[in-house]
Amino acid sequence: MSELTLIQNLPHHHDHHGEHSHVKLLAHRTTLAKRRWRGTAEDGHEFGFDLDTTLSHGTHFWQKDETSYVIEQMPEEVLEIAVVTTEQAARVAWNLGNLHFGVQVVPGAVRVTEDPAVLQLLLREGIPFKRVTCVFLPLSAGAHSHTHSHHHGE
Image (cartoon, rainbow, N blue to C red; front, side, top):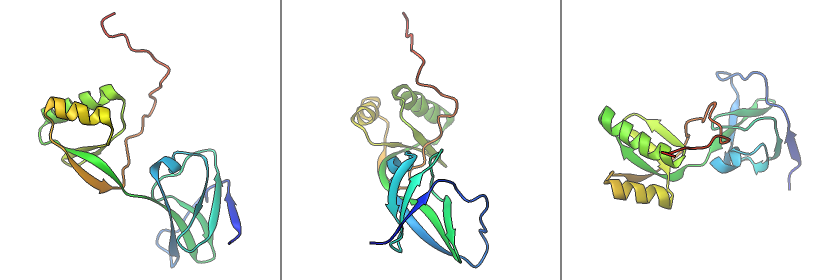
């Protein structure tokens, strides 16, 4: 068992074009959403994370000598909905937005995690989709807060 390296701060700068080798630490999206977690890089080095913020795909989090350690998010199966027209895109966005699921927008498509409510919606509305495996990077909620309430026709 290797020694655990505790990461509490991220490096301020990183040389993306230098002669550094890169070592990946593979993590699931739900793990990356946490501020405290443990993981093992592909070279066997163990890390503990205790950060003020979350990490994301592609983040360089530690450097030792000529080796740079980088987060690689695990690919996962998601639903991909093709959108060709603005009307299709608006319809899909409105429907998924009402369910409060995170979406990833890519050229010509919208991606969402598979969930029974999403599947029911897509089938009921006749919206075609396919399953794809990819690194799912949902849009940030930004200033959205879950402390609000909805008043639909009350």
